[in-house]
Length: 120
Image (cartoon, rainbow, N blue to C red):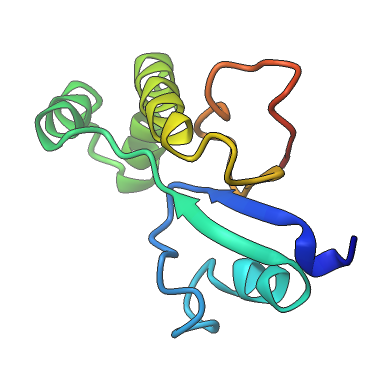
């Protein structure tokens, strides 16, 4: 087995699907570097549906934009919803990856199980 035989699936909230075409864009460099040495088979990006995202933003409205952003991102309900969405997306990739490479901690890598290997 060579390092290219290791299949990595990315998990992030950042838009990095174009990491091969734009390896210098924000947050894409990691996946581009991994893909040079291993095989990055895809990237899962669990996003809240637009209506849920909108209500989450409304619920945490704050005059300080930095504080508002933190409240939106760190909301426990949103974390759980993104985790459920991540699980649904990860199930679509079942058997097609060896390792999940998670870039941020605003979501769990699906429902944890012994056969799901991941790294933060």
